[in-house]
Amino acid sequence: MATGLHKSDFQNPVIRWVDARLPVFTMMQKEYGTFPTPRNFNYFWNFGALAMVNLVIMIATGIFLAMNYTAHTGMAFDSVERIMRDVNYGWLLRYAHANGASMFFIVVYIHIFRGLYYGSYKAPRELLWMIGVVIFLLMMATAFMGYVLPWGQMSFWGATVITNLFSAFPLVGESIVTWLWGGFSVDNPTLNRFFSLHYLMPFVIFGVVFLHVAALHITGSNNPLGIDPKGPQDTVPFHPYYTAKDSVGLVVYFIVFAVLVFFFPNLLGHADNYIPANPLVTPPHIVPEWYFLPFYAILRAVPDKLGGVLLMFGSIAILFVLPWLDTSPVRSMRFRPLARPFFAVWCLCFLVLLYVGGKPPEEPFVTIARVATAYYFLYFLVILPLLGRLERPLPLPESIARPVLRGGGPLPAGAMSKPMEKA
Amino acid sequence: MADSMAQPAPQDGETRRDFLQLVAGSFAAVGVGAIAWPFISSMNPARDTLAVSTTDIDLKPIAAGSAITVVWRGKPVFVRSRTEEEIKSARATPLSELRDPQADQERVKKDQWLVVIGICTHLGCIPLGQKPTDERGPFGGWFCPCHGSAYDTSGRIRQGPAPTNLPVPSYAFTSDTQIRIG
Ligand code: HEM
Ligand code: FES
Image (tube, rainbow over all chains, first blue to last red; front, side):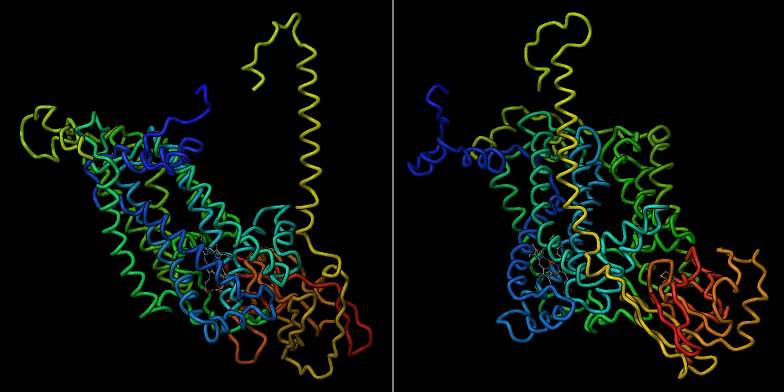
């Protein structure tokens, strides 16, 4: 350190010169090259990388959309239609951005499901998990404000209903809503600030994703068995093993994305958003974008305004304390014969909520939503805490290498660590 | 940070340094608050938005039993010419049946004319019931399609998730057939 230069292992003189002064190459090599990763990942472990790619796509398409978008109530709708009809490839940018948001939520929901099933939220990854929940919240805020920008009927009424959620809070509620609006209804000041924030938030997300990955590289990745790697025989270097596996997933992801963008670009959207916003007429059936439906269903399941709002926020807030609600020391549900069916029912409830959230608020949907909401919370607040005590988990494998390499008895340590050294 | 620095052992309880840290910390907090305030405040309604606006309405063309919607401060205001039965049914309702108890007499200036802000007090949709063809819900007033709140012929909440009655804006009769809102 006396010379103040980093001792670089790179041979290329240019890279070496830079690396000695700013060791970014060493860092990349350490974090994404040789980084020891459990050898038994399945394809659920693709979704973090996919989410990162998706974020980059959102930022790229968004910046180019913003070059032709006008954030003014009198011009926003027409500027988006101009993007669709007159701007070169404008239709592609917009459809990629709109469907990219849907893809982002599909990817992140699967990513969260992975964490729930394999117990990735448990010690020592509690903070990593909580940072993930923060990213999820920021994503929802970003997508909500983005959906307001085209200033169609759903944009306007979605913005009205969601900002009005805050009016449920006693005393300060009305002032908060006026402050959010910058006026007495959703109007031009609201559209302007939403555009400003919609541009900003993805970069905030980028920063929080960096923290997410930094925390991940301290604890290391969880894996389908949920047991810790015990040595080099249990891990492989990230590159080329998982760069390759992630690439396979990426190809499938792009196929699904392309089918949406090129063949069904409006499948996940709502036709009413092609009607310009009209503050005097509420569409007969307003629904948020599909990715908000489970939470919207929880909101509507409660007949009381404040209660509905609290329960809706609570359904996400509860994820923050999940690491302490689940008292079982066993991470992977593969070894939890009781937790597994209870979790399956929870997933079913989540999907049911997604379905009824898009239905009108009448019977039988109201009752179904209430039952599913009750189970959603029961699972976290009662079932998981109790199972930790009552359940008898299956015996855990001794190491990751053992079941992966199948052979019955332990292999000589040397034989297993050999393939590693090549990388 | 200061903890990690070698400090002389405090002689008798608090030291001058503790005091200086507290004072500096408090001033910094006040400073941050003072700097944050203009940013937060800039998001509240601007002066032109606030500028009191008034809207004049001619009631003559509104036939008994029908209603019009006017815009005041960017919000829809419902002006309804009520029929005798509608007034009667609003007044016959005992206050004990109401979620947000208020007598019909307190909500109107002249029995025939009901003036309310046409925004559902649940989450802000515009309730149906202005057009003759609209669904008016089980209480004959308005029905909100968003989450099913129903209002009566006095604009009071009777059913559904909305917590309060449709608010009555401040208005005055400028002549027998004219009102000014605001
Ligand atoms: C986390 C990343 C992002 C998400 C989830 C997201 C989501 C959305 C959504 C759902 C829409 C509405 C699409 C529609 O129905 O038309 C939208 C619109 C828009 N977004 Fe984003 N966005 C993201 C990042 C960005 C960034 C970084 C920019 C850069 C300025 C941007 C600029 C825009 C613009 C200009 C529109 C309006 C044009 C349109 O409606 O297509 N977005 N965004
Ligand atoms: S906004 Fe009217 S019932 Fe919800």
